[in-house]
Image 1: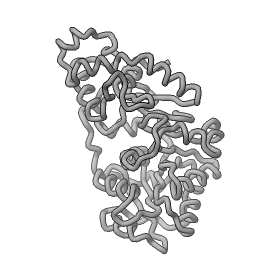
Image 2: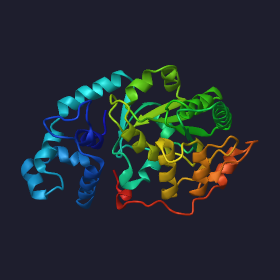
Image 3: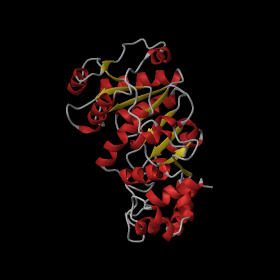
Image 4: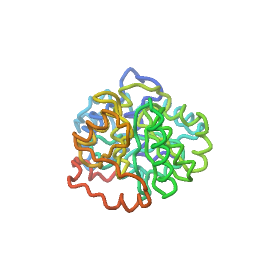
Amino acid sequence: MLHPDTEAVLLLCGRFGRPQENGVSPLELHEFNHLAQWLEERNMRPAGLLDVSEMDLNDLGPPIPVARLLALLQRGSALALAVESWESRGLWVLSQSDELYPSRLRQLGPRAPPVLYGAGDCGLLSDESQTVAVVGSRHVDESAEEFTRSISHVCGRQGIRVVSGAAKGVDSVAMWAALDAGGTVIGVLAEGVTRAAMAGGNPAALADGYMVFISPYDPNVGFNVGNAMGRNKYIYALADAALVVSAALGAGGTWAGAIEALKRGTTPVFVRVQEPVPEGNMKLLEEGACAFPDEPWDDLAGWLSSLRVDEAPDLSPMQGRLW
């Protein structure tokens, strides 16, 4: 059963596999944030919109045109079909109203996704385990691959959860190395979860509770570069520290995500400095990243605990919302 607020948020923001429904476009993130703030100011929850008449909405004066809100909220049949389809594939959905929605993402304030679609054990998102984001290029050389496998294997053995983007190259090597060592992983997708949940050995790892996939995008949407860039902030937000194994200089999602994280200053960013060091990694050091410690990695958990972030997250007032 969907939480009533989650149902309302899905009706407002969900795409249900198509760009438009009833001739209107679902709310974009900035539009949802305006509406959420408006609701908060009136001590209302999203579910309250399901019971408000057109006349009352007109009187209340929401920041979104009333006709558009009503058209979105009247998509109940499409939502029911979508939920049935998701459940048949073992998928789930969380909104910011759900207790299991990860608190690390809530700290993004207005940048937090209103809805998360996922597959696997969603409890992996909300427990207090230490986490490291391991990210890098899709095109990985032998030395980078060996380094990725080694550090991720150590994380798995020491109970440190690996977060990555589940893409080819460094991301996939990191996730599977951690799993091979008995660890757990979070994959933050740049596409819908449907295809990834059915690929390769993923179904077994998801079913056994060692892996969870999440995406802010409709479960059936395909990969695109914009989504890949947009999901980078979620990878970093879910981690106590981030390790960039290899980054192309000035280009690509790995570079963009690391630069964004360095500007935010809320997740420590480290880079691999073992030879041969990619040019992008050297430049990230100049931009404020730190060199990742050399082996042996006997106590990564202790090292993670020693890290401190001086700058507090830039939180929106909406961080305080009760739903």
